[in-house]
Image (cartoon, rainbow, N blue to C red):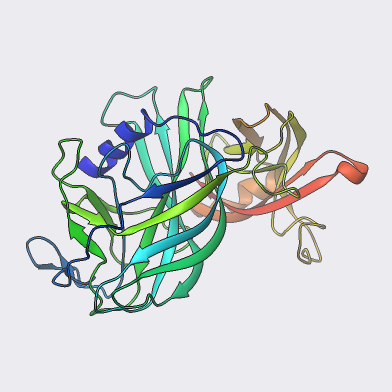
Length: 331
C-alpha cells in the first residue's frame, strides 16, 4: 500500500491556491520517456504478465511533483503527455479519494472511485501532446468531520504494444514505489487500483488547473462528493459538496430517473426511494442522511448495491438550481 500511503502524506502538506489562479501540476516533462518501458500486458520491474491489454497510471514523486489536484475547487483545463517513439490511443481519468483523519495511520485513505476525463486521443510520437479537458475537480477539507476529499489525475493506455510514457525516477519522499497503476484501464464507477504501485517511475504527463471558488459551474449548486453511499439501518449517508459562495439549502431526493429540468427527459413515472432537506456551508462537504422509504427498502431487499439518481434542488424561482447525478447505494 506504499503509493496510497504516500498520497495521504502528500495531501497533508499541500497548500491552497489563490482564487482565480492557474497552476500547472504533475511531472516534469523535461524527462525523456524510456522506449524500453513495458506496455500494459506486463507488470514492471519483474516482467510478470497482467493478462490485460489496457492500464491506467499516475505517479507521486514528491510534494511538488505529483498528480493530485491542488487544494481547492477548480477545473482541469488541459493536460499534456510526453510520448516516445511508439504511440497509441490514450485517455485521461480522474480518481476521487477520501482521507479520514479519524482513523489510525495506514488506514486513513480510501482510493478511488474513477471516471474518464476528456476524449480518447493518440499522442504524437517523440513530442508533447496537449489535450483540452475542462473537467471540474476538487480537493476539499471538512474540518468538522476531519476528512479530505480529493481528485487524482491519471492516464489510461488503451492498446497493447504501447509503452507506458514514463521514465525511471527516484522519489523525494524516500519510497520504493513512485508510480501507481490499475489493470485493466479504469472506467466510470470503478473503485479498484493496484495497491503498492509498480516501481520507481515518473509518468510523463502534467495538467493546468484553474481555481474556481464556486466550482466553475453556474448551473450547479451542489453535487456528489462521493459517487456511492453506504446504507445502514435503511438510511443512506450521502456526501454532498456545496459549490456556492453562500450556504446551500435544499432538498435531495433519491429517485429512479433524472429530475425534470436537469438536462434530460425524466422517467414517465418517478419513483422516490427517499428524500431529505439539507443545509451545507459554502464550499464545504456535508453528509446528509436519507431515510429510505418502502420503495428504497424494496430496491435493496435482494441485492447489496443499486444505482439511483441523486436529484437536488436548491433555491426557488430564477435562482432555482436542479442537479442530477448517478449514485450507487451499498449495504
